[in-house]
Length: 475
Image (cartoon, rainbow, N blue to C red):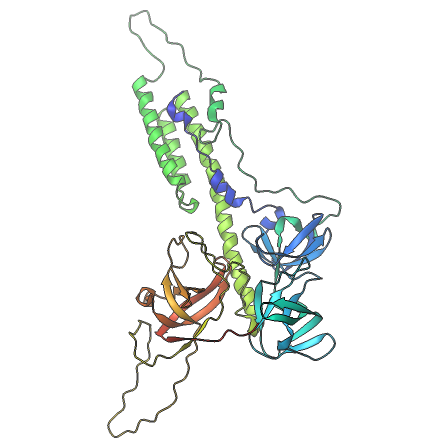
C-alpha cells in the first residue's frame, strides 16, 4: 500500500466543539421567551451557566420553566423557578408590610440563594433606592464582622438561573412517559474507506481494481491497455500535492476552508487520469471533503448561536428596569490564575473613584475634544466650579497578554490589579496603547458581555484622572 494511503487525519477535535448542541429543542429556531418542561428524573438549577456555579434548586420531571436565552455550552438561561430566593442585608430595607419592603440606599447588593446550604457568593444585580422587594423570611448570617441580619427575598427582576438544555424540552414537544429526544449532533462516524479517518487500514479489504489483460499481438509489437507507470506516478504526485493543501486548509479555522475549490481540484485530476486505481483514491478523498464540509456547517451554526446569544443578552439588558441595566452576571473566580490563556475576569468591585487631577497630565488622544475658551482682553472671566465628569469607568489601562483572536486587547484595572472591564476603542482615533499604565476615566457604552464573562466598555473618549481610594460600601 502506498504510504500516502496511510495518512490518517480525523476532525475529532473540531467536532468536539459541537457536542454541546445536544438535542432537537436546542437546535430548533425559537422565539424567546418560551416555556419548557423538565424531561429528566431530576435537574439541578444553578446560579450561573456552568457546573462551577453552585446549585440553587432541584427540579423534578414535569416541572415547568421559562427559557429566555440559549448560551454556548448547552446551558439555558431561565427565570428563577418557584422556590427560588435571594438574600439582601436587612439594614438596607425598610419594611412596609409583613412581606414587603423598600430599599433605602443605592447600589445595594442582592445575592443568589441556594436551597442546598449557605452559599450566597454570586451577585447578579444591585438595587436602587425605593426599589420594592418581597420578603420571604429573615436570618442572622455569621460574617467576619459578626452576625448580620439578612432578608430572604423573592428574586428581583433581572436575576436569572441556568439549567442544562438537554434536561428540558419545549412544552409543545413534551410527551409524558417518553424519554428525551435523541441528540442530533453526534461525532462524525468514521468511514472505514476514508483515508482521512482513523482505522483506514480497512482499505486493504476493498477489492483491487480490475486490470485488463496484457495481450501480445502476433506482429511482434507489445501494446499495453493500461496507463504507463510514469503517468500513474505523476498522478500520485498530483494527489499528494492536493493532499498537502487539504492538510494545511483544515489546520485553519473552518470559516476559511475552501472545500468547493479543493473538491474541484480532485475531480479535475480524476477526469485527466482515467484509471480505476487513481479514480478510487480520489473518490476516497472526495468523501473526506464531504465529511469536513459537515464539520464546517456545524461550526458555522455554532458561531451563529453565539451571535444570537449576544443579541439576546443585549435585548434583555434593554428590557430590564433602569437600575438593573448595568447588572453583572455571576463570576465566582476572584483572580486570574497565572499562565492561564483564558481570561476569566472576576466580578468587578468599585475599588476606586475618579477625581480630576490637580496637576496637568499628558493629554490622551480622543475625538472631538472640546477646546478651552480663551479669555479676551477687557473681559472678566467668572470662575465656575468644575463639573465632575460622568465616566463609564475609571482605572489604569493595561494591555492583555495571551489574548485569543477576537477578544479585546486592553482592560481597565484597579490600582491593586483587580480586573474592572474590557476596553475596545470605538474608532482608530482612540489610542489605548498611549494610555497604558496611566490612570484614566473612560466614557462610552458599557454592558456585560456573556461571551467574555465580564464587563465591556466601548470607549468613545478618555481623559487623565487622579484615582483616589474610596471606602468600600457595606453589603
